[in-house]
Image (cartoon, rainbow, N blue to C red; front, side):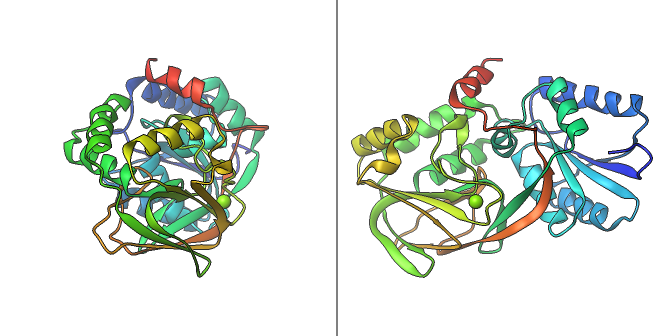
Length: 313
Ligand SMILES: [Mg+2]
């Protein structure tokens, strides 16, 4: 991008993430200023505010690029607000997990962000919708939704990976494996006890490759259903997933599709991008090529090993 071509709208959520990421955001802003880019910095007051700031930037004639600094929640709202606009979007990931940015291949370094900005490589990004809620990355029904709910209830300010440890343990021992019915493109593919994860990125928290074949710009949703009725099976299927061989298991159904419906006769929670999701039944669809996002040239998803190390950085 040329510094003469209008201004960059930077939507900044200062409440999310660790101080090391905030420092990189600060350094990146200094870099842009040193190159004479015109910046309009807007601090978000809430997720909804992030979305409306993005929607405003989308229609501003002299805004030539939008940047969002924040976690997955803020990024999702900005993608939603920008949907349908041709303004390029650059992520300045500064949350706990940064699911989407990791998938796109963004690293946690100033050098990497400068490379991404200067290369200006654009890639389409789809946006997913579940009932009236939007998400960019991964949603789940059952086990992980229960974990998300406990984390969300205990949440005070920034969360770290450690905040997930006891909720996972607690959910693991308490989980009853309720039955769910999963419909894919109007065909029932599963109706039994199990856990379903769906979305548009190949790697879940800590880089675990659940939706292994997912492509964030192919206009398709991926879904993985684990046929699972007890704790031992869950551990077994989790290990298969970490070893990247779950899709070959008879206990796993993996599909790519345009539309998913998930229902249950009992109360089952949902989550979207790590936040509590809407009530069941869920109807999930995809908006292909919702925005154009800057990606690292030859970028690929950040793997499990690097993400494990990041916890201790
Ligand atoms: Mg896809």
